[in-house]
Length: 214
Image (cartoon, rainbow, N blue to C red; front, side, top):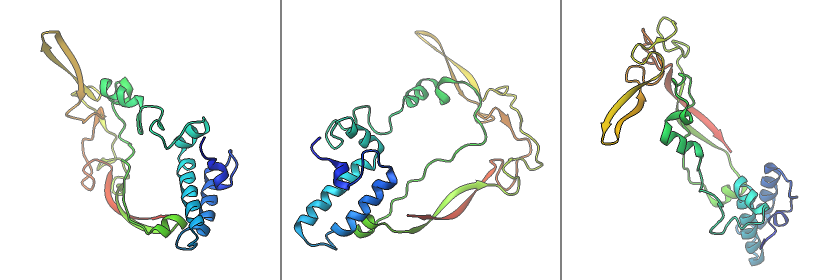
């Protein structure tokens, strides 16, 4: 290892993520160029920032602890950020790694990526911001059920509750059978007979929320 990142931040090798963050902020306050114009302090500030970049990232920290260079060309030591074998399973077999069946109506929303510009001093010392984001919340009219009369969804007659339909395509290799989401129930395996007018049967409505981030 070319640099002792733990020693640079003054923490032990078993330090928690919160302890590493506190150590970095404490050093950054005293070494930041806006506070300390000493050239040596500026160089140490750079070293402290590099150490925090490595130790605050679980993957880079683990790679560093194994004796690797987390900032080198082979830092990943694997398939790259975001790689998952479930991605391959989904590509070949569809959702849930080949486990056929209807998808649940209760589902997690997609992650939101919001980019904001902050001054260098705030990035180093920390700050608090309020962001307004559009998100999906439970429909208060049907209480998330999706049905206007509160009745449970009924089994889809097109796919018989499987959430998918079989499609056969002829080729020179023979018949190729594939499964596609049911066009009637959209993969849920059930349909809402009397959908809620407020949410159109989705059980969720769009709303704007204010989030406080640090």
